[in-house]
Length: 308
Image (cartoon, rainbow, N blue to C red):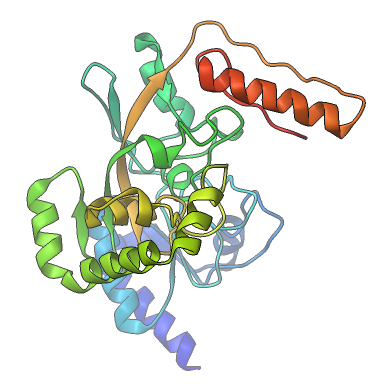
């Protein structure tokens, strides 16, 4: 009974600023509780948010009433990150801002922008975003970055982690961090000294452990989207860079990603792909070694070689 009372109190207070954009009728909870995965949870409440201020308010209310928030963009992942049995917060209908920067050297994208729409904006510049998930015509930037969705072509060199330039995030306590804004960074460092110190201590601990350091480095030299991006703790010294890159692939567990700045990559005019068949696994492995060597020498010639 206590849990139901908490959610009822949350709904009542949130309705004060979300108005008709929050609901708990069964039909809509059932409809929005479905994503592309094989899992099924029915949220107790569904809320549509239109800006960062509303997200911050929901975070404060969630903490006050002891309820959980799950953020959802397109819900196109097969792994079920965008469903819950608590409060489902949807950005699908808002957060559509996109801005091309530095003559398409980078692009600033809100979390509700569809991946293919970002690429359409960049096409006249012969550029695109690095991540290329199979669902790019549906997937939104928030989910692409939060899952480090990388697709078949970008590998580990052009994924969200490697092409991240900046991001705006809201933590569970409502704190906003914009890594492209120095004032925001300084305010964050002053307000969350505990988090800064904790991250740096983790880095020191890993660097002291040669075996663990080597294992992390090895694991993230190949495509690895399981768990947090622990390689951030060895790739960067700046705690803000570490924190921002830990958000990549965090699946919403560290906070809400409002927008990101991504470095753009070249979009070649001519592309092709090939499916090669071999008599046995040994021949296939040798071919993969040859293709990998070619990629190292001429990365523009081959973007990915994988065994299937």
